[in-house]
Length: 394
Ligand SMILES: Cc1cc2nc3c(=O)[nH]c(=O)nc-3n(C[C@H](O)[C@H](O)[C@H](O)COP(=O)(O)OP(=O)(O)OC[C@H]3O[C@@H](n4cnc5c(N)ncnc54)[C@H](O)[C@@H]3O)c2cc1C
Image 1: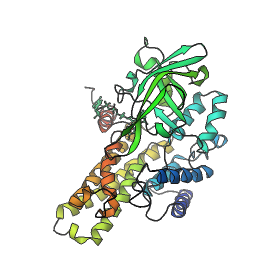
Image 2: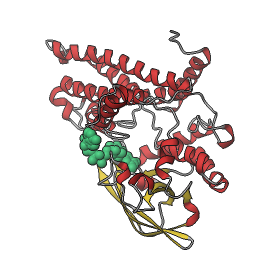
Image 3: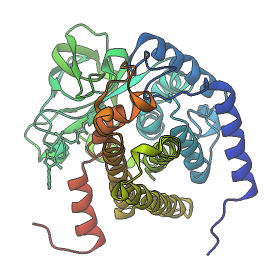
Image 4: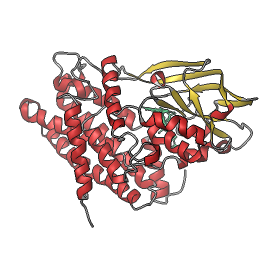
């Protein structure tokens, strides 16, 4: 077994680290900005994130896996994984990547020449931001049940319905929306994909504040929203199948374990400096030791997915194992962090008594999201049980 990165890959990792050292202020964290006053979602932090992403775009790093003619670097899976690992470890504000992750690849496969010319360059340059409008209140894990309708009316499509959990809808220029175009067809066969101008008349974006008090996602309502007929992407009623194909990018979930490693190291440093928190508490020391092992195991599960992809194979349940494990490690680590800090752990970052700038409290609350977004832990376990272990469906 060759268990080493190539010299080029190591050189690339160094390049990313050097970039981050220069571009991120000392002590930076996306879970608390420059200091405890600038929280995720604040104006100051958004503006910093925008400038940071423009710098990434200039290096073509945002769209690194894309072909060169569309503004990418045709980077290998390993290179993408290293990039994602380093960005997550540094807690860099890489922002919304939906345009890069699936809108762009879908347009490359299914879009018209006009659509490619119009939208790919502005995704690559970070001049236009996209959000993803899939989930509905009755269609999350079972996404094919979605009910938002798109009806053809002459040269236009008319959209009515409602989406939920739309990350960044309030700051996006364009939406990538799945809507039902044939209600009579079986549920997977009546869905189409559309480009949606987020400022079109009839669209209402209502904020949803998460349990950490942050505004990340939204409800979005559509009332007779009219878009040109040319905004459909690919074939009518073929949307479900297009969604699956366009997911051909790095799927290792390495960002989750890299983030966990960062917070674990912070907690270790803290425990060495503030010895009173761990003295006479063997159970906390043991949890910290165990989590170190879990992070290492999680990293290897993620590397395994990358290795499969690099070899041209399509990871299936292996990607679900990596996603499940790395998101659950985050939950366990943040729980241990809260236990370690005791009552101090509950303090808001703004409190002068908060340790570690209150970031463990933030992490504890946001780490829940990782076990839900992109497929819940239960759905991952279903996939592992059925596809990985060959167990019968319930
Ligand atoms: C931070 C965050 C950002 C998100 N951003 C977006 C976005 O930008 N755009 C978008 O469209 N969506 C987004 N989502 C929504 C996300 O995709 C859904 O929350 C997710 O797919 C789960 O769907 P649901 O919330 O409707 O839960 P449900 O599917 O209703 O599930 C409820 C519970 O039942 C369990 N469950 C469901 N089905 C099964 C089953 N078959 N077997 C066992 N257990 C089951 C689930 O695991 C869960 O615990 C985001 C979610 C989060 C947390």
